[in-house]
Image (cartoon, rainbow, N blue to C red; front, side):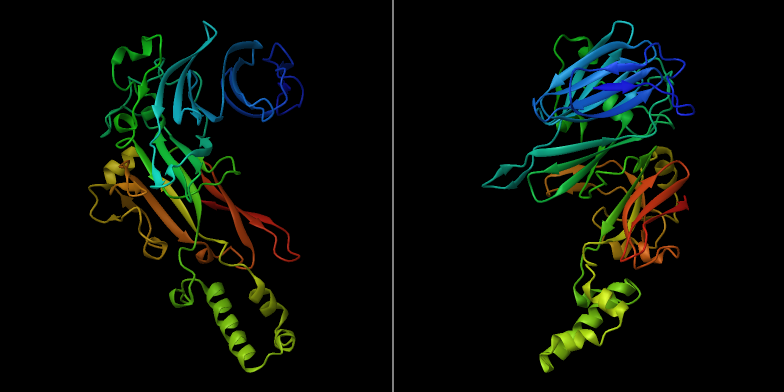
Length: 408
């Protein structure tokens, strides 16, 4: 597999690249992250069963180092000199130092993930898939030559962070019935837990979940998109949510007008079918719009847009603001939608066992409250950058799909 180093403005070899291509003798899926001259590539080859992380200096064409293991599912750069790997074979987040001058990639530590039983008979669930996201990529050169960020501003957390220190999101698909998303600051993953001299050991230490996780992480029972590349930007995360309850007695006209109309229509047709078994005749009397509404699968569509903000300075400031409301992380959509920015400091519990306490702010908006959203078109994705949210729409009937942009 060859990676071509080209300039976006010309489509030809990048002027800073000494070699036109970087080649690996492998046929695989590849994901890439870049910061300055550092190009981190994860090659996943389902045929050989071994995944390979390769660090290149794309300007010189040199191979800085590589790591090979089973079930390394995702990577992101934490700084130009460090990365995190979702290692599902070890059920850990592995932190590596990238040493460009020595051309080496060194495992610093393994942050062990929690093991949670979904059923007494089945034992702990297994982590089946993982997807790490953190954008934008760290700037090069790093804001501090020390990859652990010592010379930065203090916060309320037991580690140091700076304003540009963004959030890392990791979506886990498990063998259990639920999917979970983990959120942690980059500096929390880089923090040298335990023995300060552990980074100089010949064998990387295993850091128990109880030591690094509960205070520095937030686990939520939500599933960020596995497809859209930038649902994370800086401290913010954008996700779509489905309705939590679609039973007829729990849907009001104001809350979900389209679903309310569908429920009323189906109840009316159901009653007529009891009185008259001529189903075809009943349906033929409906307008084209009513027939479409009757057949639509509204239960599976996304219902609300949720933006989470983990900015520690904003959280610290709003904790003393009497006008900000606090909610539980399990507060249902109908009780948080349309209420503006809300503060969450109460712990989350995954399967009522694993407790996490990283505070965050959140804003929830029902999609049908956004005036530019056509209720007949399905929102199927969301992306975020520093200035706006991008909603992706799928086609309904003969209508084309579209993209809507709304400023933050």
